[in-house]
View 1 (cartoon, chains in turn orange, cyan):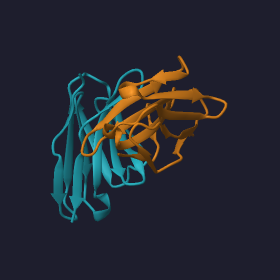
View 2 (cartoon, each protein chain N blue to C red):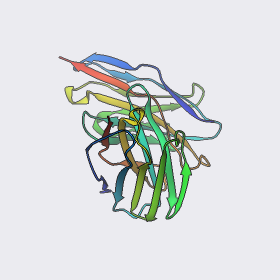
View 3 (spheres, chains in turn cyan, purple):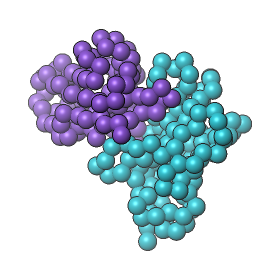
Length: 114
Length: 111
């Protein structure tokens, strides 16, 4: 079985400071991992994905994530937060042979303050 | 760009009514999905379909059914709506490399 845990339901940062959103996964097979973002009243948008190539993955809007197999983690980072980054972020896991299913984390609400 | 559209952004229904939520995609993707999104629970898979007339139960199929008569259209049906089905419903399609594209969602309120 596969599962994903987002360690923080809410994260608050000041504009211009680094962002860290934490995600741990459990999967019996080689996983594919994703981060999606959902802005208020908008649909989910793919930020970045890991599919067994480079372990450091760069996404849109300056976000990146590092796949660490030994720690079963896929944390999302950004060097400098912007007000427009305020949104809900979902870590997602899938694996080959998983019946095309994605498993979503419960989400992390990012708040960016002036 | 992949476009996934859902028939309504907001819907209000009464307990016991039959409810149809429609989803249409324009990219010829074989795989389509229905999720519900609730605060603190993330997205939970209700049903998915990997081909016309094919369907599989997701994690929370109880109280729901689906229909896929054409490749581009995937319908979610609430046979008899209940108040605990008040939620945001999201439709998605999937590419071959697991990436999913989501529709804007339908916020359903059951009174």
